[in-house]
Amino acid sequence: MGRFFSFLFGLIMRFAVLVGAVGAAVVLGGALIAARSNDAAVETQPRDVAVIVANETDSYVATRRFAGRLAPQQVSDLGFQLGGRIIELTVDEGDPVEKDAVLGRLDIDQLQNRRAELQAQRREARASLERADATLRRTEDLVDQGFATDQNLDDIRAERDGLVARIQQIDAALQASTKDLEDSELLAPFAGEIVRRYVDVGSVVQAGAPIMRLNEAGVLEARIGVPIRFRNRIAVGEEYELSAGSLQTLGRVVSIVSDVNTGTRTLTVILEVEDDPGFVARDLVRLALTETERETGIWVPAQALNESLRGLWSVFVVVPTEGDDGRLGRIVRKDVEILHIEEDRVYVRGALQEGDLIVRSGAFRFTPGQSVRIVDAV
Image (cartoon, rainbow, N blue to C red; front, side):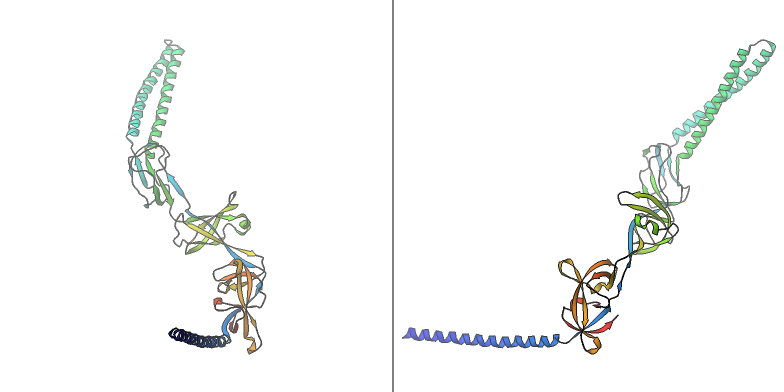
């Protein structure tokens, strides 16, 4: 009997729990239905939207930018015209220099010794020449008196002429020695800035070996590769926009190198920077050129674009409905193809048509089919 009452009590308790759960579910379901009803009431209120009226055009002007490098008008790797040991360098990297300033010197001891030797040889040859002149005069008198032959006279005259030629040879060597002494000093061919030094004091260098690099001070040039199709759009003497980072200025075309780069199919355009805003030599610079593209499309704000399916793009368009002077409408998605991008707008083509009311911004706040009210139209 006790087991029967225990079984009956358990059955009653399970029934009570089941009834309570059902009641709770009923209450929760009612709450959810009420919440959805409230959301639906909110969604039925049109959301305010700003639009732009689509205006179709048959072309657009695109700005193309081509990169190049800034460089001084003159860049020179300087070296001595003769070999030797460097005993002095008067400048270092970053130093400004004036034209004809002394930049370095070679050891000239050997040059001076060679010059002294040539001078001694000249004095010796000069003394021999004076003696030969005297002998020639005496021999001419002896020939007139019949005490010397014409052969003796010719031999002495030939000796005298040889000494004259020897002196001329020594004089030429002395001039070369003077030039070598002058070349032992390295002079700046133009005013500028030392941007690199390759050797130090004490180095033994060969003739012509680069010692330092000098960039000319003043005007910079931009050397930029431009596609061949732009050849007829660039004219020598005309000005074009140049930019390097946030710096902008105008450059005047001074020449166009007609030799085509076979790798890039470009021509080299050289522009002179007329008003330097702070450009740095060897920095990257860009040339801006405009090009008209014959493509039918519509300009839309960049903020109007939405990422669509399969890598496509789309915009939201308001389709007006009846009532409220045409300000009420519903959102419709239209896929587009991007043709050209600028900073704040995009040129597109696709499902858009002339006169469509495109949602200007905040497209993430809308969904297709949503009711909206147009509050601003451009």
